[in-house]
Amino acid sequence: MDFIRFYDFIGEFTIINGIRKNRADTLIKRWSSKIANSFRQWMIHDNVKDTCCPLKLMETQMARELPFFNGMHRFIPALVQLHGGNVKQIQVQHFKRMEGTSKYNLRNRLIGPFLDTLAFVWMRKRNISYSIKESTTKQ
Image (cartoon, rainbow, N blue to C red; front, side, top):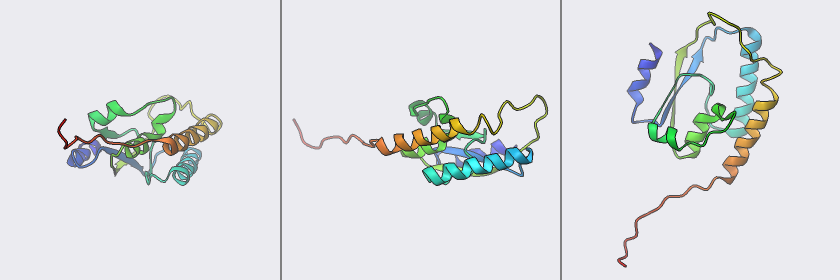
């Protein structure tokens, strides 16, 4: 049901990103996510509250143009902004896990994401943004 609300913003925003409201996760998972999102925000300043919410709707052309590396899923909205796009965030419902167990924990979600954040900061500092204009002079 939440996803249908995203369609109101197609054409106005390059990516529409969900923000999980009232998360149905364990206290440890909520805290670790809060710490990770706060650190990410402090480092990259993209104003995206819940970058890893799986509900996203993105323009096809932007999805084709984005560079993608292992671990960069955490930075999709920031990459969109880096490439000149804009982001809309919408609160969505979050449901408790029905089956299985998470393979993620504080130990394996600490070093990799930290290094990925540093890599993104490095890429952003070295990004060259340009556009090609048509020449008005005749040759």
